[in-house]
Structure formats: C-alpha cells, structure tokens
Amino acid sequence: MNQIVFGARNLYDKARKMVGDPYLLGFYLNTYVFSRYKEPRVTSYVVSYPKCGRTWSRTTLRRYLALSGVAGSFDRDGNFVRRPGSGFLKFDEDQGAWIPAPLRIDQLRFNARKYRGKRVCFIARHPGDVLVSSWYHLTYRERIYTKGLSEFIREKLVGIEKVIAFMNMWMENREVPEAFHLATYEQLREDPVAGFSAMFAFVGVPMDSELLKTAIDDTSFKKMKEMELHKELVEPWMRIGAEKTDRAMKVRKGKVGGYKDELSKEDVDFLHQTIAAKLHPALPYGRQAASTAP
Image 1 (cartoon, rainbow, N blue to C red):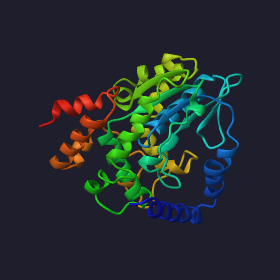
Image 2: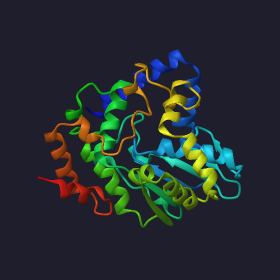
Image 3: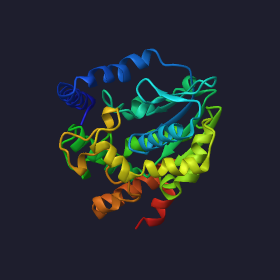
Image 4: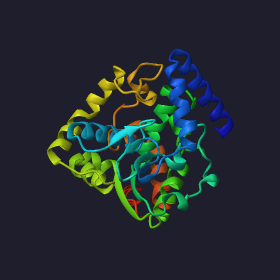
C-alpha cells in the first residue's frame, strides 16, 4: 500500500464517520488542522508509535487528575494537559501518525528543535504486538487496509521495517531532550502502579499511590471497553468502529505476546529475525527475539 491509497481510504473513512456524527467535523479540524498551527507551550511529552499504550496512559492520567484534584486539566483535543506555571504536557505520535497518511521510512526526520530542552517519556511495545493491533485497527476499525496480517507485517509503509525505523530514530536521539524516560507497554501491564507512577512523576505530576491505584482500576481494559461501548469518552478514536464487533474496538485485548497467537510460525520467525537484526539494542525486544531464534 502506498501513501496515496492509504490517504484516500483514510479520508473516506473520516468523511463517512462525520456524516453519521457532525460533531466529529469540528473535532477533526481542531485536532489535525488548527492545533498544528496554534500549539501551546509544551514542556513535556509522552511519545509513542500508534498502538503502544498512549491512549491507556492518557485515560489513566485523566482519571488520576480527576480523583486527586491536582492542578491541571485536559485541553483542546484531549492530547494536551494544562499545568499552571509549568506549560503543557502533550501525548504525541510524533512522526508515527497515520493521519492523513503514514510517512515513508525515508521521510522520517527527528525534530531536534522541537524536543531539545523538553522532558520526553517514550513508550515502546514489542513490534509484533504493535503490528497485530495496528492491523486490526486499520482493517476493521478504520477500513483502510484490505489484505491479510501476513502481508501487513511486510508492508513498507506500516509494517515491521517502519515500526523499527521509528523506534530506532528515538533511541538514537534520546540524548537530545533535556531528560528522557523509557517506559514499555510490558512493564506497564506487569506493574501499572510502578510504571505509571514513574511516568507521571517524570512529566511533573505529583503522585499519590493510593489514588493512582484507584485510577488504574477505573481504567482497566474491561472498564475501558465499557466506556468505549457506551461512548463515555469524547474522543472519536475512543468510539467503537463501524463493524461494532470486538475486533473493531480501540480497546481490544492488550495482551502481551499476543502476536504469537495471531501469526503463523513462519511469520513469527520473520519478525524475530528482523527485530534481532535491526532493532536498536537499547530496547529489550531484539535480545528476546535473538534468544528465541531457530
């Protein structure tokens, strides 16, 4: 799939959704047009490739702030957190965004000017799980991709090479920001209290462990699915897809290592070999892949 085809299908998908819900027109314009030209003073970022846990992190922080009464509020399109006297925190896909179409690998450029002097938390996830979740999203939720999962992981525009290139770009430039914190989806799932406490404290949010535990419980995958089904969150990307099935949901499984259940042995071996050969050593997944290689 090339950028033109992806962009055309993406535009059609968004237009179809706006016909069914006119509210989305203003939301999309604010998120993808106006906010790019009027971005507030951002001092901290939470960055990840799509499908790495950024939505879960943002929803948990939103709930924590509501419970704690900590000075700060979500603003604009839901990706900005206002912190009086401390600028804004932004949840960002950086150059991994799919709207209007993904960048090609040769178009990826690290924006040192944007991130120099800022605090950046980068969330990584095993590329295999990223790809499976991306395929479900782009196939059943957005109706952009039409081929199988085996073909998807080999696509230059959104497949394993792109995921690795994005993660490598960040690992190679992690010294540019004033401070850099690496979080992994797997760590967040294994011990969400420790993971989110470290992440939120890093970006300047005062922590109360008991309130954080409550916030994490309130944003469990089961409860987030219920919120998505009942349209309790304003963001359009947190509304169930047109197919209205589990495979079309934003919150689908969240399983660590689930890619092994979805892919053939040949495809798993292909991913492991590519990850072991090309992924930056600062991330643990290359070592894991090498240890399981035939």
